[in-house]
Length: 501
Image (cartoon, rainbow, N blue to C red; front, side):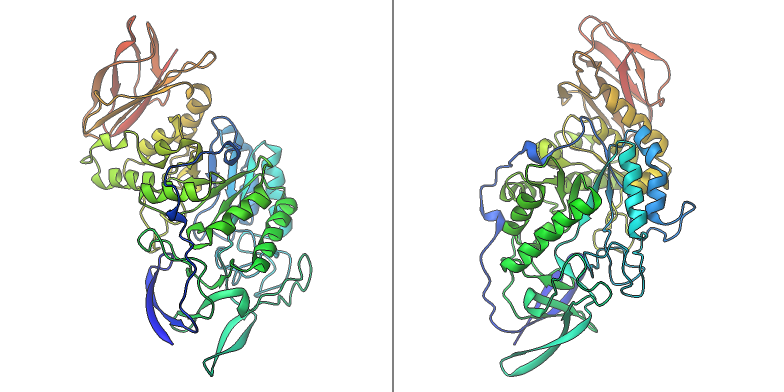
C-alpha cells in the first residue's frame, strides 16, 4: 500500500490516492506522437457559417415559466433558429446521483428520465418524453442537436463490493445493477473490476486496484483519475459497452452530433475507437473537451486523435479572459492570429464562456466579465472556427440582442478571405476583414478596448464603397476610395462591423 497525492482538476483539490496492488502504468501518452495539428473534414459536418449554442449552464433551475429545462429549450426553438443558431448542445440527459445532479455525476446512462432511480424519475432537466419533445421542436426549426457524452466515470453505485489485496479486504461502492431499470435497453452491470479506481467518501480518497490506462502527460495536466469510479477502457468489455451505448443514444434521440466530456482523462485510443464506431462517416459532428490552456498541448491532442474530433479553443478563452482582466489596459494585438482557432480552424470550436468558466467556485472559474461583446464579435465574424454562444450570455446576461446582430452579419457577410491588419493595430485598436465572395459583400471588424473613440485609416478590400456599421454602435456611413482606403471609426470600449451597402 502506497499513499500518493494527485490533483483532481475538476474538483480543484488534492486527495489521497490509496494504491492497492501494482503501480505499473501502461505508457499510452497521447502527446508522444507527431505534434503537428491534423484537420479532418469528417469532424466538421456543420452548417456553413453555423453557430452552436450551449443550451444550459451549471445549476440551471429545475422549473422555468415554460416548465422543465427540456420544455424551456423546446419553447425557444423558433427564436433560436431565427437568431441564427444552427445547433444546440444539450446537457447530460441521463440519470445522475439524484434529482439535483447536473448530469456529470453519471449513475445510469440508459435512464433518460424514464425510470424511478435515485429518488426520481425525471433528471434535473425533465423526463424522457420532455427531452424528445425538445429535440423534436429544435429539429422542426432546422436546429441540430448535440448531446453531452460523459464516458469517463460512473458515480453513486447501488451497493458496496469487497475485494482483497495483499490479504487485506476493502469495501467500495462499485456495484451498479440498476434495480429501477433492470435489463431494459442493456443488461450490462458494472463491478469493481470494470474500473481502475474509485473516489470514495468520507475523505474522497482514491482506492486503486488496476493500473491506470495511461501515464500522465502535458506536465501532469492530463491524467486518468478524475471523478467517481473511473471506467477501465484498457478492457475490451467496457469499450464495447460504451460504443453500444453511444449508438443507442444516437438512435434514441436522433442526434446530429456529440460533445465529449473530459477526454484528456480517458484513454485516447478508446476515444478514437468510439468516434470511429459511433460517429464514423455519418456526417454527425463531434467536439471534445480537452481542457489544455497550452496551445502546444492542444495541438498535440488534435494529432493524437487524428482529426476525428473538433476541440474547444481553451487557449482563446483565456486570451479573452486576459482582455477582460486588463479592462482597457491589455494589448489588443494579442488577438492577432490567436488560439487553436488560428492554428487549426477546421477543428476549432471557439467560445467566450461556458458552464465551467461561469461556475462560481468551480475549478475552471474564469469568466470574461469585461468587454465580453468584443470577444463575441471576434469569434462570430472570424473565417476560422465554429463559434459557440453561451445560453446564459444570450438570455440572462443581457447580450442576446447584440449577439443576434452579429449572427445576422455572420450569415450575410462573413465570407471570403480574411486579413489581419498587423501594421494598423495598436494596444487599443484591432481590425480584421473578410473580403466577401461572388454573392456576399464581406465586412470590416473593428474593436476598441480603450476609453476614447478611435479612428484609423485602413486599406480595406472594399473599393469605392459606402459602408454602414451593422451593429448600430456607430451611426452614419463611411466611404472608401478606389484603392479601398477609408477611415474606420469605433466608439470607446466598443465594437463595429462595417459592411458595404
